[in-house]
Length: 233
Image 1 (tube, rainbow, N blue to C red):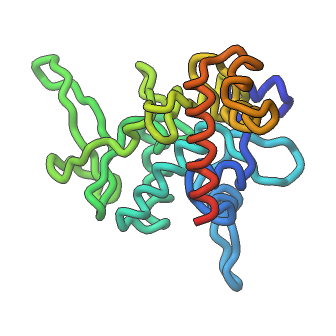
Image 2: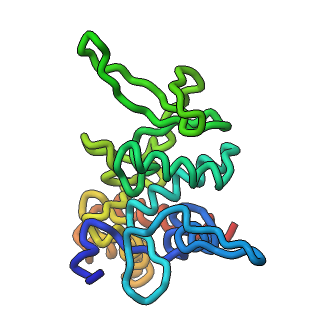
Image 3: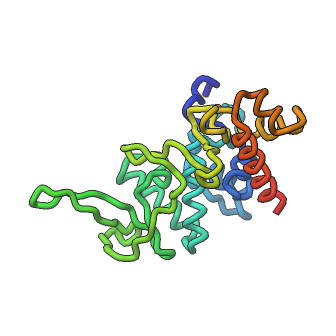
């Protein structure tokens, strides 16, 4: 994959992705690269959308979203084996390579449901939940979508992610700055604005240097501090 091909895809090392997702980098590498325990091999949960041809693991934006949902399911008590099974089944049903990153999933902590639309005999569209393991429709155990901080397109695919909500106006958009966190209004990477405070000597000077508001700089500083604190923890 060439650099130009990464536009709209995003590019993250497991370390960079781990900081954003609060998931250990080694775990992300196992999920996307597979691993061995003794004589037993475990395949990757899914194939990364990014390959630079150097046999290293990288993630794209869709991989971030897939990992975020997979991690949420596992934190809810769903095993990695069930998550892998859900990915394979859902991939067949909805035809997406990264099905968990769509907005069609629900979980009750024990099972994973795929939201589908079926047309009734009267010609009306009816929402149903397909239990991916028993392969039958369920109508209970519905929870709110786990991707509340993600914007989706009309096709149900993720478009942008607000890592800590919309308050700071910091967004991850694969179409801008290769998916690095940026100030949504100016498109300047949050890390650059935060570091500019030290380089320029003040928030006001940093804002002037990058032609952004002082509020944007303060938001970037708060954003960086938040993630540095998460990494330290």
